[in-house]
Image (tube, rainbow, N blue to C red; front, side, top):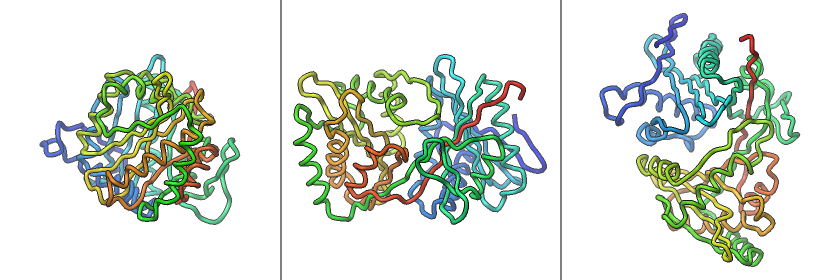
Length: 364
């Protein structure tokens, strides 16, 4: 139901059948306010997405329950709330977001929204809340996570808000960018060296949807993202990936007119896929690209496979999306092996995100 608090409405959002449907106005407003908030925080539009591109990723499925609210001030959209509930066996985790336009900060709206999210999380048996927030750099005191890697400004508004409400900073993620307009000579050189070190492996690539011969291997690697990637004290449920989940994943990107390229390393002797990298771009191929999941399975590390799939993917990407000016990627700040690869390729840090966690008490 709709909840109104001191003139502010947190209105549950209907997920429309399509972006032009009669009930799609709130979803379109949510996309607009999302992009405005991200532009304010980051200073650029590289994270912007159209409502049409967002919509497929909000449709319900059997793996996660996604709940959203539009925040309105006297009928004007000023923010959004989100709560994602993984539907894994006995999950106690919820992922949330509270995002508001800066002109309405400091009025208790964020606190009211967080109270709503906590109540819904409790009602769904969740006791661990987790969130990621970008923190623009500024001088002054710093907050450091227990990992000992990275920090965020202690007086950043989002950091103050989360700390005040019982969240702890658990991890720092670095956002880096690579200029695709620069020469690719270094990437060619690094790829040649990686091929020499990766004897017994070969590169395979595809643009979504996933070819049938790679579905099982891709599903297995996707399932390992939550177990093999550094996550500090953040909690994730093991995920079950199969052909049906890969098909759903692929279909969402296709419906959003997003192009996904997967570059994988295949063990020649067994045919096993053992490392992969994803590059994604939206319908406007002149905008920034995004490097999404990258992983080398633990049992296949120390063969330069991370460098292999990243360099091979980037070189092909120059042909797939030749007008895209840069690639954006995120990595845990303690993930030095992957950061070493990125830095050697030419990625440079542009911002940092904090990974935050709150354990709800039994008493409410």
